[in-house]
Image (cartoon, rainbow, N blue to C red):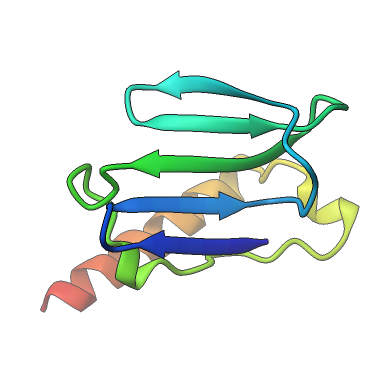
Length: 95
């Protein structure tokens, strides 16, 4: 995965797969999805990224998936714990 931000034109591109793009689909006002020939998502382009609240200079990867078992949805308890930790980190950063 590769994340590229072009400051001059305020576009954030998230490349998920290094493959040729077969088609593109607009999935939101400022978001375009690149799709491969096999239907898989290749990447996302977000225009006016900073204007839409994305702090492109401070984009961080929150989780790296290393195995297929990591792809399972979190349990309710895991999801609550993660939300709580994120809220606490956000409040701590503001202090």
